Length: 408
Image 1: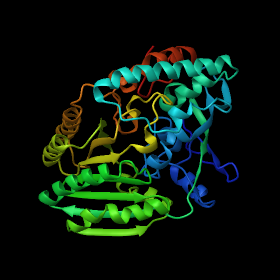
Image 2: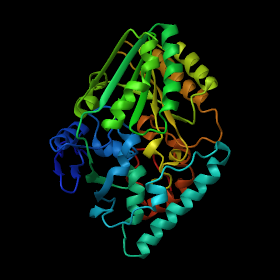
Image 3: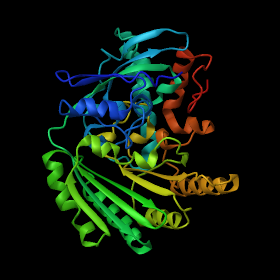
Image 4: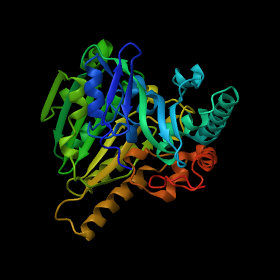
């Protein structure tokens, strides 16, 4: 099903909502929203499709401040496997309790993570069933779409919540070159991220690349974020990066700054792992894996926390206690033969396995995880059983299977 010609975006500035057709790209939405001083969390590449990214989560520069892209979905138009076209799915579904939707839950000890997730999964199922009983027949489907959407239908449009963006985000960028400086940047990044963890208006990302270099981004949203950036980045500046800059950047430019490196025809392989901390042991694993990385590969680390941690509101088990998402990525070069490509992907897989050392950790970020259908049950953790029940209801013949497939 090709929706690439359906790229319409309609913004309602009074409601702070945008209706986005199923083939629209983030650059389409970002540009239209910016005309009204509004924005919403997206990914890191503006040529990505809105629906595809949002339906599986959607982590971006605004996520700590406003939540994941999936949290912004107010309603959806969906074509089901039997051809039924449902309009405004989710409109009228009661929001989750304030304790889940609007308050950051306490950090869950990893020893309790699976038990806590089972409780959250049970609560989510009960809320959806109760909403159906109270007159919202689409409540089950709406919950499933917001995290496992590709398994349940073709989304022809989404209605997304928008947020005021009266001033451009403030962006700090620092590039460190050479083995020693890149490893130093990893430590300084970890320290900075921990210092600002409870300040959702600040977000820090790290890219470790080969040949040896590290690129640190720190983004501040709003007046508080802008003020916080100046203080937070001082240790990075003192470390003497090869290049550094600090300037306000329009959100549309922030969202498109990685487009060139991720253009059409790029073939990449990635694996996602969630981490609770970037302690010394974890940093040693990252550093040693990075040193062994093939040329042209990257280890990316994204800071989470803030409003990304909303357990139970979506079937994404990693949200309860995760503070970082990390993913090694390899790119296939034009001269790579099958043996060289196998060597690159093996490094990627081994790096991810080394980082997934905690048996209590559950779930991966599906937007950054190359499809492995045998691991779908672990992707969704305790939410998987209820998703199977809903899959049986909405797509019993598994028409929608070219995805991280939920098998009945």
